[in-house]
Length: 213
Image (cartoon, rainbow, N blue to C red; front, side):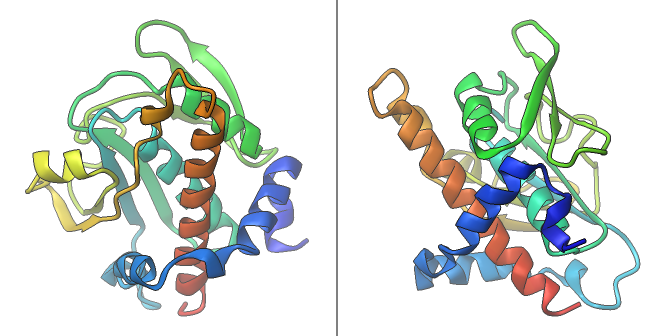
């Protein structure tokens, strides 16, 4: 079985498409991503999990996308021991437009519980324990309290959290907010492009990590 054949079929096709676009990543952007590649935890002699916490202001859109694509990319390239979660500087809700974009990319996502901050269950493989995805502050469970790398996915969270307590590393990989397109004719296209960009970049990161271990 090939590495990526374990993914859900539609997701596998989406990943293949993004792998064909890695050359689209600008050189300056690659330099930012290489900071994540160079995390000490990804050394070949590591003996503990690598914990990544993706942080944006509301834990609503970009941080969830980055968390899920990091997990898929690690799985695709057989990088073991990666634990990716997400959080915000405040809790709101996992935005349904972001959920829809991830579904269009091939993730299986179902409601687990409803409410102002609904909980979703997310699958990227047929036989896996689902990930429970919901909005939370970055230091709330199930996120780790210490021994993690904080990846700031928006400039507002970067400014609001100059220090992330408990983090061993703090990295800024910011993405434009698809929220700017909410309610417009371009809404779905903008969310899909942000989803694809984050997928490309996480695949780029983990392809390089896989080459080192």
